[in-house]
Length: 186
Image 1 (spheres, rainbow, N blue to C red):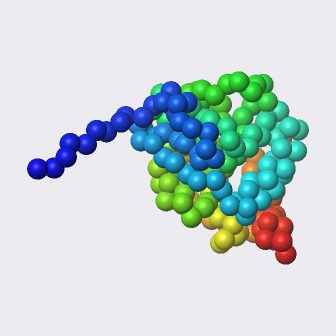
Image 2 (image 1 turned 180 degrees about the vertical axis):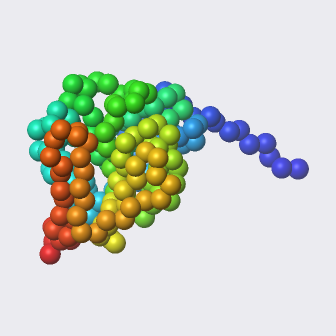
């Protein structure tokens, strides 16, 4: 006779009861995901992209936020992307992201433990939540996989990434070759 299993249906509110132990805790559709602290290369990518995005987004009325920062879509969906871009008027205390237009960009940097989640469940969540653009950055392969809200296939970029969240502003152009050389200390 098997032992009965007790399944917890996790909520964003339950995340607050978890320890501050260096792990990243996320809940997606009632399931808890735990990610260990990121690697140095992972953080180098986040920092380099944050610097590039921050200067550009400030100039066009947007704000770049780096992890850790909780993005709560509902009681059953709270994630912590590596980088996100929101309207500058957003403020530091807002965590609920239920309306269209509240997120302009979400960026996840791949790690060994998150690759399957970033490509699968998180991509679907961001598309369902109508995030206009989602980048999956792979430092090892030196590429960025770009997903847009209605895409069924990604665009894989290795040379230049161009992003234009505001039609009236010039686009941001990121030299990916230079970015990854910096990250890898070349």
